[in-house]
Image 1 (cartoon, rainbow, N blue to C red):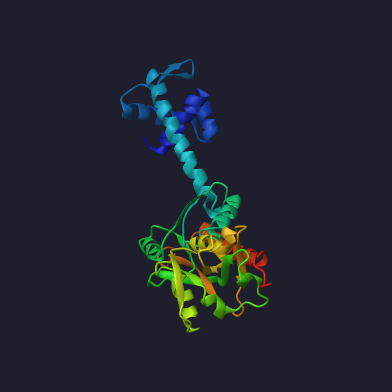
Image 2: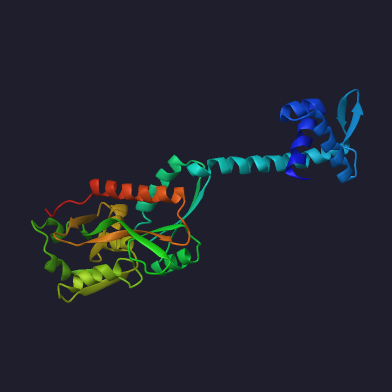
Length: 304
């Protein structure tokens, strides 16, 4: 059976006659009758008994109707999805992020996206940088938000905002109480540093290396959130990105603004061979918006 035969058969079953079915479908009655006869010949069974200008469905017709209704509902679903494609309402989006942007920035943007496109579905995962590159190159994801630059010929990497470096110390630490933040003093403290896999590692290490002060490494971690947890527990002093700092916010940790600290880029990353959908473009715009809100609502104060 093709879709036209399904449509006509369903109309006859619901209206009880070829005449009413023709009115419902806005076609001629003889055309409906010919199609039903052809369908019966094609199937090799009688679907209707003709009684006084009415068609009485046979048991075979009722069996067929149950299956036709399943197909019809599927066709309607396809039509509904197709009609909403231009608005992104029924789309899916596969989002990746680096660890720090996946704490609050990306989840908040996703929440706002789903408020706007309530019937869409998002698949989200926070991955190491090398895995983000592999997934995007293999077209296993649509977009990534990264706090580290990614390099591959098929990746479209665009700066959408910036993040800054903060100093995380235990509550009551002298660095938080000082009238002016002393970077040299901070670098002489027991430090919490990042393993090479962390997205912050390269940019933070390069910045600290410029100061030429030998560092006393106390703990090595893989994420900014872990660095905040260590600082809050008194394990040492950490230089953390503001996304990790904002997500942690414990009562036993202080965040100190670092004068003249450099800022670093946040990137949206897509595959140049896979055009970004309306849903994906909207998501990136919402991430940009969240970056602005984060900056306006910063929990960080100047050193006392």
